[in-house]
Length: 219
Image 1 (cartoon, one colour):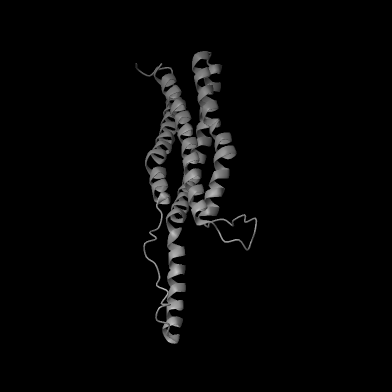
Image 2: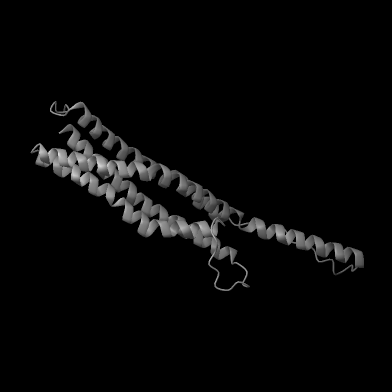
């Protein structure tokens, strides 16, 4: 159906901008949930190989050799410990970079979409186009629901994942207790999975907002 001729060029441009913005954000969120986060989860789930063991050398005790073996064992143990959590830590660090980039690019666009769709609702009501006004008000409301969802449920997960990746200071109950790498790996996978499900919900909301805006545009 053709776009109604009653829209001025400015109003038409605003409508197209809102629809395009909401669908673009929704597509970005969906792409993150279907491609990027699953790759991070796969990387975080990988466990280090424990097949390589250090020989103790007890059957042939030689003072110099024993000392050298002890030094080598400490070095290899340190390297093994470092490698054991590189997978999930690297995944957490990549997530933090993605989250910061998404925040900087999506939040301003979402705010603009809310203001613009709110203006379109006001303009429609003023022009006595109640049906169109309801639709643009619904677009503004749908986009606005992203903020409590993000701030209330997803941002706390962002901080938890950032602590696991070393980007934020950890909250250790006992300072002298060594970190449990296996537990941290499991937590990273769990937090990424929960965040991903919430992000999928966000993308559905944004697709719905774009669909309603498109409906009003072509009506």
